[in-house]
Length: 269
Image (cartoon, rainbow, N blue to C red; front, side):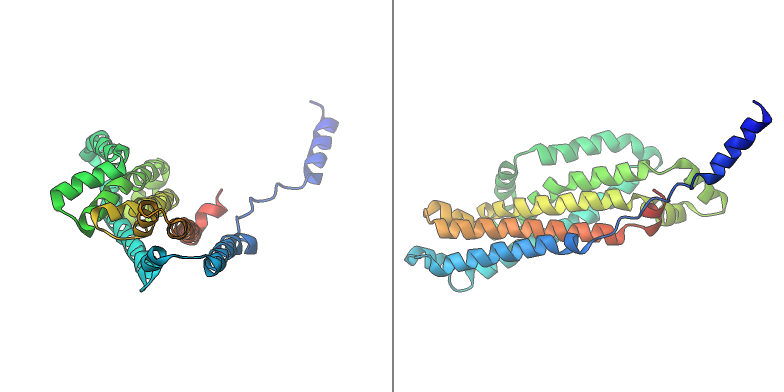
């Protein structure tokens, strides 16, 4: 290539602006407020409908004496407690299954976790009630078994997806295996782990409606009462509260996912 052509290409390269760095995703005002506003509108509409609804004695008995707030609080408790134990079980187990010789046990453990979620929730709850008796304990164990899979699989996937060169570099500067895990591997795996936790939370909100069949309480009490007594207002209230709780939990989990994500991940993408 001749010298004039080279000079022309160099001048063209100087005139070309450098590529702009990738923009970091920001949580906009609309994203933060849309779902809460939507839920407020839905709940307010439901409340106004109930103010005008003609409730008979059976419906009033099902909704009086704080039954609605009690069922809602029980539902929240079931969701929080079961998700806590899912995290306590699934995250450490996922870490162990990516270490040394324990990797060979990963297919077996994942098969057991898949069985827990593949089993119909109502059937699993029935078996646990036969084994443990009626009460909250059977419902919690069933919910935990049903929600372990997403957190466990995402923890394993997040740790395995880490760049080996980064891990070697961390070991090269003298970090111990525990230090590499705590300061490099887990922070890089946080987005996938949080996505699994978000899925588990929504699963637990839905599964908690079945706790009523084992004597565990929750909003399933209202749904069941509305179906068995053929009282549409009670059924509608239980269903709407369950849906609203699931959407609210998913929204809060998405905010936590954005806030807890390591800052360097967004800038480096």
